Length: 278
Image (cartoon, rainbow, N blue to C red; front, side, top):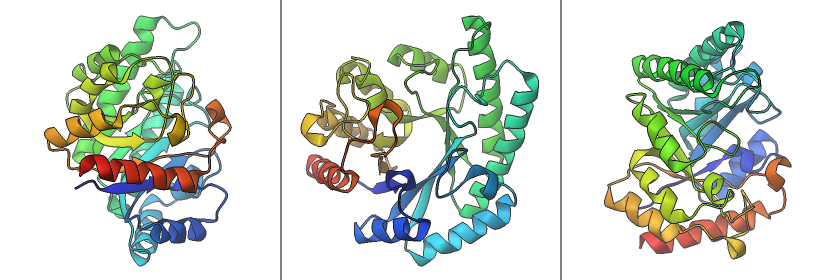
């Protein structure tokens, strides 16, 4: 049975209360929370002032709406290069660790045992070898620290990150025991890769982001989608994937992700995945 969650940032123009009510109207029973530095329903600075009390308050609000939190997507900077996990400045990396520790407290109080972060980016004046080394060191620290709190840590390979090719993603995962993947096919398909090249990553996924995508389009209407969702679902189901499929249409100017009717596309996507899962 396919289980669905939906990202709060699918509907950023609604208030938090309106967004939660809409998810229930759409008969969605789980939610992915974006803990972002940029404006959102759950602003990072606000949530982490008192992470435990914020998590408890959010947990009560979600319970009142019948929603289960399944992932917290942590983005410390307003864009991936800002406060990246592999920032060459040790002071930034130290601050990132402090934020991550607070985010774990928030997750624990929220009742969520999965957190997603970004893998790092390339930085000017930093060699590729050092960029990867710093990313691996800091990600390994996050994995170990999360494990102590009973929380699984995953990275999302994304456009512009240091892991954009499936084989490189696997190398990164293999280098860090316990690290898992939040898999979004769109980031690979947009760059021109074929779904067959992405399918092997399903074996390493602890969480799934789904939305339509096609070459040159990180996010596409379902009528324009070229992602092989049938192959994805078949592979996930055959390995006994027990997690959620996050319906993750977003509304953001980045990568032109503000050109879709997110309610309609979310419903079309969910219907297709339900049929594929049989």
